[in-house]
Length: 244
Image: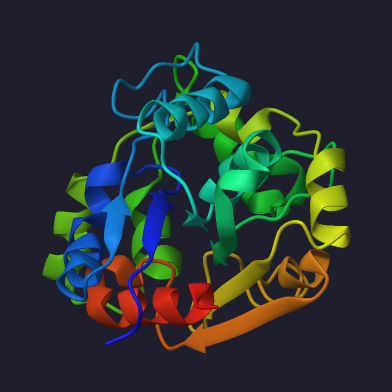
């Protein structure tokens, strides 16, 4: 068993903190403390919530619970949240872990850094300021390592994402200063069969991991949603990515 750590796990788009339950259970079984908040705008499907509001909701959660010395994990879209949370409370964070997550260039949005077909999908498929991921994209690109029943059950648990979370541009000057000066340590956890960002010029790794400077790279087999297919292995890799 590894030494006990404290984890704060930030979910991706179309998810809530509840989706971390199997991973959190595995981490807690090994003695770790785990928090799984839901970013504002998701559980309530509120299109008026901005990216900054989502960040503020997590910062407030951390402050209210007085969480200290923790490993902050962001999955996918969650990488854009943890980058801004790190700017707000850098001295509370032990290490950042980006799990197949966006590490945006300062001043850009998720849509800015996504392939053209994704940008067109969001622009053409949103309704009332919310966007639901199409089943075909989920099945073929996000959860491509599950049987049909598992994939469909997981799909039915998803929530709509505020379009603002994908379109708001995120200023990250302070984040990159914290990384460059060594005040923040970072790891990148890459699932090797993850095709949510298609392999090639848009691949998660090394495109986003290379922006983190001196960065620990941890890899494992699996899709973008290995949280549904192998949460125990994912938990173990998070410990490996977050360890001292």
